[in-house]
Image (spheres, one colour):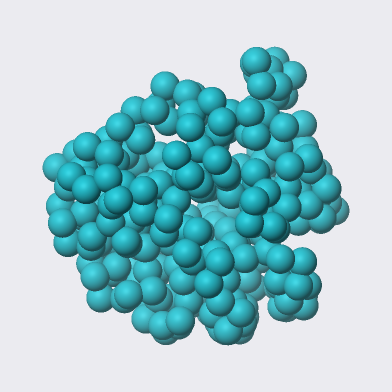
Length: 277
């Protein structure tokens, strides 16, 4: 299966020595490379850790002052080439004016994917500073994995709701935006809004991370019938997954699509098209 496992979090030290398994420490690049092969994927998109996040739990994962993308690019198996086992995704703060120059530098290094998490990054994706950032992202043709739904972090979750992503997609019609968690993370009821956003904005994509087993199968079947397989992208929030859970999610996606080609699009073809365009 020439599939890409999207939305994979990587951190210095991963989840810690106590979590070590046959592939190493979950949350490290070396572990991810082995893990994806064990579940039949050929590549993954590895997310750089958030830089200097206010949340103590997130800060402990990387440490103050760390350049997340620079750290990521130095890990084994990370590369921007089409055959690299782990493709890099930068996690820059949209509201930080310095991110514009860093974004261009990341693009020059071959990075074609970004992660935005309005709650962890304490940002409003629709404010003026963020608008400049997303305008440049759209101009460069990069894809954005955007957390949608709620969360347990100490910050209001309204900036991460599907309605915000919907508006962002309308303001930037050339922005390739993946609605991670399908608008439904942490119990938020944003699934229908996410589908409608993708219906109205051809630049938006429904991304499955952590929701294939949380949202009823019938709702996913409805999403597929309304959007088609070219608008749904598989992701899974590694390292907070197990082989059994990934296999179960892949089985669900394949069962939803009567055409095997449709499943292949959702399991890698779509995200590959977005980051290679």
